Length: 183
Image 1: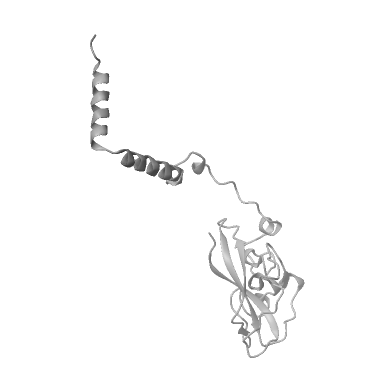
Image 2: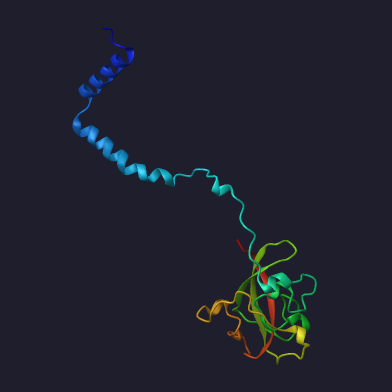
């Protein structure tokens, strides 16, 4: 009876292992393989579900109705979390205080979606202080609280007068400056 090539090669390999390795080293290598094997699913691998597109974001009521033309109205896209009188209606701008007032050194923040480009931006709302509140029409006195955080996170709350650290704590108006793009 003739011996097959497969049997001959298997026998040579088995004898080579028996002569050149000990039971202890084989057990060590098997144990290492068993310990490392669970880490293979963590390796960066392109997966089919990773290539699936993200669903469109759910828009809030404010985001659906926001406009990007007139910054002196409460429905302007940057005013998604503002609470107070718009400085643009008092002689200032969307991000500048009117003459005779000074910006508070602290601010609260919000994340607002620009309807023009569909991107979200971090907005710093800063109170301008030092003069009495200016007399403005209703469309300039805003109280929007889109995605407002509870008061235990004061840096994101628009319910606080932020005239801390200024010469006068008298509130005048609020600005909305873009800090950067949200990720």
